Image (tube, rainbow, N blue to C red):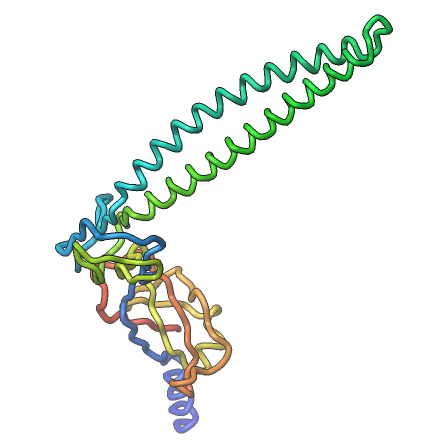
Length: 251
């Protein structure tokens, strides 16, 4: 009886044990931002490295020419909008006149033909003006997008590294800055096979505190480097300090 009792105690103790995992608290996402435009860097805030950015620009790329072109295109749009309005009024008046006389026997065929070609010509002028207006609006859209992309800002993102300095010239694809989303925390764990296959049914403890969180993802194939382990990801809402080790248990 005594031996059986000891065996039961050992079994209970074994079942109560849980693997302990430690993972480094990392930002939810980390991005290397590359330039979508070309131009000279006229501002680069080197002091922002290692801190959280505000709404102010981190990097500014020269947009003086873009803004001048934008003003020109905006003026062209205003003129074309007025032209479209005038062409529309002329076309409607000439179309109305043609429709009014085309069935009249008192009007000669020559007069009817003249009215027809007049309304057709005004319709063509209207169409051409509308096409030019659409092209100008598209050009303005592209200019606004280009101007926006020359102002690099990441409010509330952590700035790791600036890859350009004031006076540098960048082209499309040039690295600009490495930033991280710290609104959430990512933990990468390497679980035992038992924990990996029963993860969703087990209670999670974070730094010895019971948690209602569940693992965000568990890979079903063992890790290429950690051959006997299964990678898992846990997302936390926040943490006091990144890069610290977080203790995780599944019981």
